[in-house]
Length: 161
Image 1 (cartoon, one colour):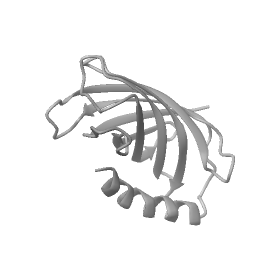
Image 2 (tube, one colour):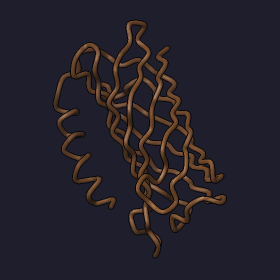
Image 3 (cartoon, helix red, strand yellow):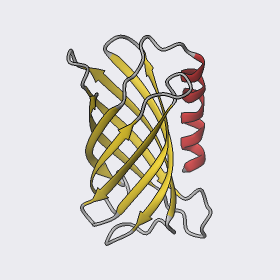
Image 4 (cartoon, helix red, strand yellow):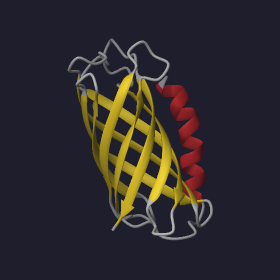
């Protein structure tokens, strides 16, 4: 699963890095909620919060966040994100992170260290807030014997400052 996700996200990330953004992306706080382990056997809801910092290499910037599922699984992560402004009102954001996972009563992902990748499509509102949809994949990249992975589809609300 991770390999197929990387095959999809890597070309998008390269295109984003090679393209000049239409405008700079400010730091933002993002809140999310949606469907965890979509199409899997342990479907549940997921809620999260994330901080996306100012870019330090063009618009490539740091991100830190946390998610919790209705089953009590927790995931805290840190990584990188890259926003690409397709138009003034539509943007794509690619992100990747590594973090620590606590299973709670949720899905056994094989171990504590888990990697996360995601692609968000967002609409920029007139006040520069954003509403979007993000697809994420989380797995341990086979560093443990068990690596079932989990996909999520979430709605995002971002508030720049």
